[in-house]
Length: 515
Ligand SMILES: Cc1cc2nc3c(=O)[nH]c(=O)nc-3n(C[C@H](O)[C@H](O)[C@H](O)COP(=O)(O)OP(=O)(O)OC[C@H]3O[C@@H](n4cnc5c(N)ncnc54)[C@H](O)[C@@H]3O)c2cc1C
Image (cartoon, rainbow, N blue to C red; front, side, top):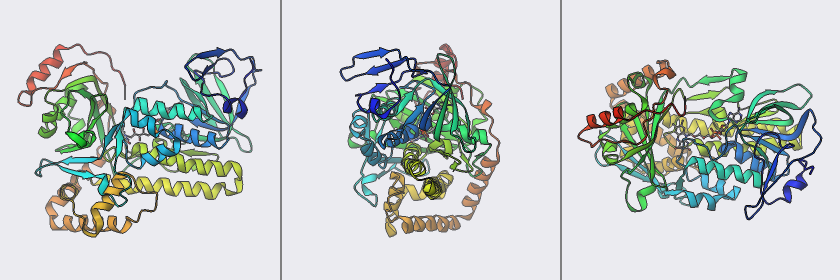
């Protein structure tokens, strides 16, 4: 049976999953009703296979652009080195993810796996009761909620969707090299898990490799963000105390002395908890990661109380050195999407939204480049400007998130000059639709500077602290490898020592997810 990669074949198949590696050798077709038919193709082997667009990476950015371009009739190949569902951190979505999910036609599937998140609760030890900011109070009231999702399942939905829309997908297939010879197609080398190597010739190459920053690393254009420097240690808990009623799915943010925590409740009962800290604190780690995570939680009584009866279910993981950017977003016949271009910080849960949004913008630019090369330059510059705008808008707030003045403003929100509405629109990810929040955000920033002047010593200390943190070099050795005693129980708030005894007694398994 000689199936070839023509649009006709793909269009008439209900759902096609190219399982691994060489599609000419092994094709598995999943028809509706889950009848699996596999056939060995006898198509003639050529030195290299052709496609219009080669997408590296099957995360939210890669799967989104692959779906959008395949839908427009381009011959798209997407390669993912792992097999879905695979673990990924980043479970909290923003309201502005929803129109994109609608456009991709997967909203209902995500609804079935997600827990509705109406807003964000902020807790600070220097302030009284926690404050909740609800998305329904944003400038545009049409997007009052989003979802918390298991990323493994969410990413699988997006990946299956791009296949359903005609992209040719390869899992457990690592991209090992790419070349951009002048006046020829882009050459991409892949290494399927089952062995061998394969070469592809593509008209356009999309880097959606996430934190691997495939192109930026190879081109030597990846830069550490000089204005931000922190790392995260996180795990999943069973039995955490959630907010009640409509607020159950809200994300909670807890500030503490060395940074902040996220608390993200998931629909299956698990809760994702992570600490984002400055390097000097990470360097104090003397214990395994689980102990370190629980020890750090103990420094934040409000969070510790929510985890009093909780159990850590799958060990702890750390991600270090995570704030970076690439000098450019595009070049000769290639673009970089999502984390492959830049990542700043998870505090506003903006990563998946920015990654998917860059894929929507990227799809326009790639489409224009392929249809009419004369328009490519303008299209790519529009893409570049929009992608940078998103990262820049979030960055101003992220850089100042641990500053006591910002904390005051978040803990005592005021809608003077519609500042609260504008802030909520930013938190919802509403940066690309022309919602007129610019002047109110400017007013918020002015208020921040004025408040800083009103507390000169506090502001100076905060500024010095941040400067010191940003100049502290990060060593990943202070974070890993992860030591993973499963089933470690949170201590009662009053007796943390018991926990350390519990953890020491349990046998650590080998490191699961290395840094
Ligand atoms: C600690 C932490 C917490 C976070 N929390 C949140 C949150 O709550 N909400 C949120 O929105 N965002 C969060 N983020 C950010 C979010 O996880 C990312 O921004 C998002 O996953 C980016 O999507 P992406 O498609 O660009 O990359 P990814 O999702 O990382 O996908 C990249 C894919 O490329 C594949 N790949 C890499 N190299 C190769 C190769 N050579 N060959 C083939 N495949 C390859 C990888 O296996 C991966 O599947 C968090 C990030 C961190 C570090």
